[in-house]
Structures are given as C-alpha cells and as structure tokens.
Amino acid sequence: MAATPENAAPLKPLHGTPLVLLTIAVAFSTFMEVLDMTIVNVSVPHIAGSLAVSPNEGTWTISSYSLASAIMQPLTGWIARRFGEVRTFVTSVVLFVLFSMLCGMATTMPMLVFARLMQGAGSGPMVALSLTLLLSSYPKEKQGIALAMWAMTVVIAPIFGPILGGWITDNFSWPWIFYINAPVGVLAAIITWSLLHKRETKTVKAPIDVVGLVLLVAGVGSLQFMLDNGNDHDWFNSTLILVLGLIALVCLTFLVVWEIHAKHPVIDLSLFKKRNFTAGVISLSMGMFAFFGLNVVFPLWLQTTLGYTATWAGLAAAPGGVLAFLFSPLVGRNMHRIDLRILVTLAFIIFAGTSYWFSTFDSSASFATLIVPRFVMGLAIPCFFIPLNQIYLSGLPAAEIASASGLSNFFRTLGSSVSTAVMVTLWQHRGIYHHATLTEYVNKGDPASAHFLQNLSHVGLSAAQQLGYINQIVDREGYTLAVNDIFYGCAILFVILVPVLWLARPPFGSTGGGAMGH
Image 1 (tube, rainbow, N blue to C red):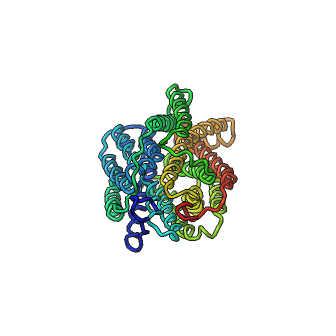
Image 2 (cartoon, rainbow, N blue to C red; image 1 turned 60 degrees about the horizontal axis):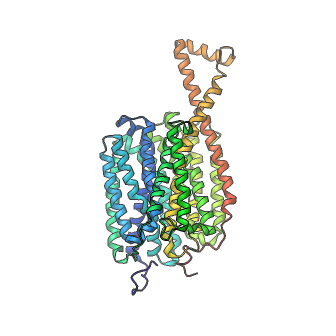
C-alpha cells in the first residue's frame, strides 16, 4: 500500500508465518510502549521512597515519559516520510529499549526523569507506525482483524500495567519494571527488520519546519510541565504555573496558525478538515480523559486511603481486562456488519453506568464489590477503542495514515496526561473540602460523636490518640467522597460525548478509504 521506489509495483501483502510473526512483533512493541505509561503508576511510592523524594515528585516519572512521547507523536508522519516507516519504527524500538535499561539503572530522581524523557521520545513514533505497518502488510479483507489485534494490545497493556508493576515492585525491585522491556524490544526489532527491511517506504527529503517544531516543543512542553506541577504549586496562584500556562497558550495558538500556512508543516492539521477525523479524535481524546482519570484515581485511592498494597491495587483494577480481551477479536471481526457509532455509543453508556456505580461506594467496600463494576467496564473497552480508530481513519488515503495515526495518538496521550493532572488535583481538593465538612459533625455536643469518643476512652486511648484516630476516619471518608465525586463527573462526561460522536458520517470503510480503493 505504501509507495515504493518509482519503478516497483505495490508490495503484496504478507501471508502465513511471516504475517503472524510480524503481528506478534508489532503488537508486543505497542504493548510495551503503552504498558510503560501505566506500569509505573503503582510503583511511584516505591520509586519515590528508594530515590528519597516525595511521592508527588515521584509522579514526574509518569509525566516526563508522556511529555516526550506526546511531542514525538505528531512528528511521526514527518519522520517516517523522511527516513522511511520501517527504519523509523525499528530505530524507535531500539532507542526505547536502551533508555529503558537506563531507567532501571538510575540512582537519582533527575537521572530517572531524564531517562524516562528519552524513553518517551524514543517511543513516540512506535505506536502510530505499528498500526501503519500492520495495515500495509495485511491483505485488504483482513484489515479489520489487524486493527483489532492492534487495539487489543493498546487496550490490554494499561490493564496489565498496574498488576505487573505491582507484582514486580512487591516481589523484586522497581528497576525490573524497566528491564523487562529489553528482551521484548530486541526481539520485536529483529523480527520487524528482517521481515520488512526490503519493504521500506519511499523517503522524501522535505525541509524541516523549524518554527513549527520549536512552537510544538515549547507549547506542549510548557503545557505538560504546567499540568504536572500545578497541583504542588497551587495552580494559578503561582507565578511559575501562570507563566507556563501563558507560554503554552501563545505557542500552541501560533503553532496552529503557522502550520495551516506552512509549506512543509511538521503536523498536518488539514486532517481536521475531515469531519470523521475531527469527530473521531475528539471522542477518542475526551473518552481517554475520563477513562484514564478513573484508572489513575482508583489505584491511588486504594493504596493511600484503603491501605491496599501495590499488587492488590493492581488486582482490583485488573478484571477490566477480562472482557476486553475476550471481546476485542469479536468486535474486530464484525465491525463491517454494524454502524460503528452504535458500538461506540454502547461503550460510552457502559462507561457512564460503571462510573456512576463506582460513585456510590463507601470506604467499607470490599474487594469483591469493587471488582464487579471493573469487570463490566471491560466490555466497553473494545467497543470504544477499535471502532474509533476506524472512524477517524475512514476515507484517508494510505499516504496520510501515518500522520493521522500520529496526530490522533498525540491527542489520546494528551487526553491521558491532562487527565492525570486534573483528576489528582480534583481528588485532593475535594478530599480537603469533604474533610472540612465532615469535621463539623465531630463535636462533644453531638450524641453519636460523644458515644464514639466514650468507647475510644474505654479502649484506653488518650485524648490526643482519640482525636488522631477520629481524624484518620474523617480523612478516609473525605477522600472516599472525593473519589465518588470524580467517578460521578466522569459518568456525566461519557454521556455528553455520545452526541459528539454522532457528528461522524458513514461509510467508515474497512480502513483508510484511499487504500481500500473506494
């Protein structure tokens, strides 16, 4: 499908063993990249502890990675045209492995943050190109399955991330969450290169759009940095955060204006003229915002408020993967039979329902009650990811798929990193608010409080210990109510997204319209 040197005929799709091998290699490299966004989430307290920094600073390990990855993703189209898709992909995998090893060897926080930054930069083009390479190697009639295989890895990795991360951290030591990338990455690079190096895409020596690149790095960099540190600096009450916010606003506004008129833009914004691309990407990034928010706050609440270990927090989040895993191939195989908007609407409704369900739990919720909605939520995951990828790629010629894929991945990543910042901040603010309102009920004049205090003194706690104990309870309930607020908000957001999605118009094709010869 991709253009080869002038004289050659278009490449025949792969079949049999090479196709299976390529699918495994590409799927695993995607798996590894997405896994690394979430595997660190559960281990942050351990990493922070061993490098002697606060857990707040520990979250830099999450954000530095998504920052670099976010900057590189929209550049994927440009890099792939300049150096060839296969070469770019394999280099990306190799860099990712090298910097993963460095992450594991880090002995100080700045060193780890630097290694995570570089690891993220290496990983940027990987996910977008993995989809492009799969689609160009699969026969036309099987591209729905290729899409499902790809989406399955993107879906399952965030679910396995916390369990794997928790288990490795509890049983070995945190550097191993990075070392496990090495064997996977090396194999993926070798297989992909040996199968595809003769199928390299045509390269174009386009001049680099320096202005666009600088605006992109400065704009996205300031935005991400602002989001990560806003909470510690009390947001816009801090000059630093205010300045970062303004830089981000100015750079990104100028970037849009510049890229629309640039001769060789680094980011192809003309894609947004396509109705399906715009509706699909908005639904994807806002859906990710809510989905990722749930997945960040849930394990945090379990570990900091309910006293779960990293492994158990991972296990509580895990059941979401079961139905996702089982239904992904099914959705992929039957996508052409159903209006994709109906599938995604179904996903949003299930997400909204389970989020609302979570918002009704209190701090005494048992492990068993917590995993039921997580399990049900798994059904929505394949109905959300797989059809949306198809919706925004529909009607695009093969040459634009790498750019479109990179741009949509950028918005997906941005959705998740904005979500991390916003949700954690909201959670803490609502926690403080609820703590204050609950404290009003604790006084000697209140019969229930008086009775409770009396019971505590019978146990032999001093007055100070009694207050400490009550403060712990109020804290726990306050943060639980705060989690309820967030889940409730996400439920509303999922409902609002349904009409946005219906702005997309069929036909949605089996994938890139140009490539399919429609």
